[in-house]
Amino acid sequence: MLLDARPLAIAIMGPTASGKTAFALDVAERFGGEIVSVDSALVYRGLDVGSAKPTADEQARVPHHLLDVRDPWQAYSAAEFAQDARRALDDIAARGRLPVLAGGTGLYFQALLEGLAAMPAADAALRADIASQAQTLGWPALHAELASIDPVAAARIHATDPQRIQRALEVYRLTGKPISHWQQEARAARLPFRVLKLVLAPTDRAVLHTRIARRFDLMLEHGFLDEMHRLRALPGMQAVPAPLDLPAVRAVGYRQAWEYLDGQGDAGDFRDRAIAATRQLAKRQLTWLRGELDARWFDPATDGARLDRALGLFLPAS
Image (cartoon, rainbow, N blue to C red; front, side):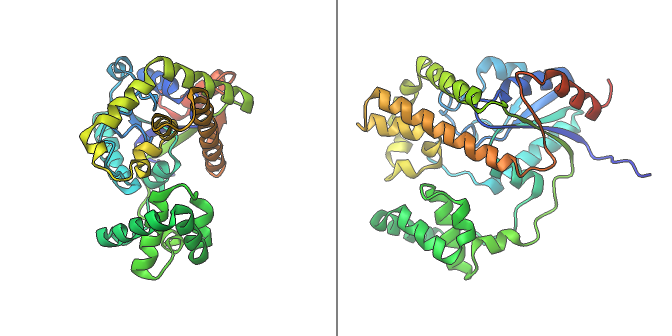
C-alpha cells in the first residue's frame, strides 16, 4: 500500500466570531505551526480593530502570514490570494513547520484548496465602462442584467456585491460565455497538501449571535470609530470616487461605520446595522461550510476533547 507522503496542514474554518483565532493560536503553539490567514478583510492595512485582526501580542506568539498585504484602496483577488498562500504554505512546510490555515472567507479557501478555473484576464477599459454604467443605473440593475445572462452566478452573487457583479459581467462581455461556465471548467491542480478541515461553530445559533454582539461592542470600546476616521483621512482613500464600492470598505462593520460617519443614522442605528450585517455574514459562511462535505464540525464550547482527538489522529506523534 502506498503511503500518502504529502505534507500536512490544518484548516480551521467557521463563521465569524466562532473562536477561530484563539484556537488557531493554540494549535500552532502546540504543534509547531505558523498561521496563514484566510480572511478577505485581514489582508488590508489599517483594518485592525473592526476586522478583529490578531493583535501585536498574538502575532508575536506565532508567525502569521497574509496580513496587511494591500492598502485599503487596492483590490486583492482570490487568485492572488491562492498564489500568495501557496507560496507561504510551501515555505512553512520546507522549514518543517505545520501550516495552520485560519479564517472564514470561503472563496479564498476554495481558490487555495481546489484551485480556480482559468479565466480571461481583467480588462481595465471594460471594467471602467461597467463601473460607469453602475453609477448611472445602480448595481441592482446590473445584477438584474447578470441574472438574465447567468442565473447561476446571479444566485450566488448578492446584489450589493459590486466587485463580483462587475467581474461576472466583464467575463461575459469579453468571452460571450457566463462566468458560471468558466467555473465549471476543469480546475487547476489541487493543493498538494493533506488537509484536515475543522469547522468551529456553536451548535446554538443564539450563542453565535451573542458572541457577535459582544465582540462588536468590544470593537467600539477599543476605538473602531477612531480607526475609521484614520482610514477616511488617508489620501489614497480620499482619491477613490466611490469608496463604498471598495472591497475593504464593504467588509462588515466598515461599510456601516462609513455610512454612519457620512451622517446616516445615529449611533444606536449604526450598531444595530453592523451587528445585523455580521449575522448575515455568519449565515452565508455557514451555508458555504455545509457544502464542505469532508470537513468535521465541532462546537468550540463543548467539543474540546473531540477536537484534541481529531488533531492527535491526524498529526504524527512528536
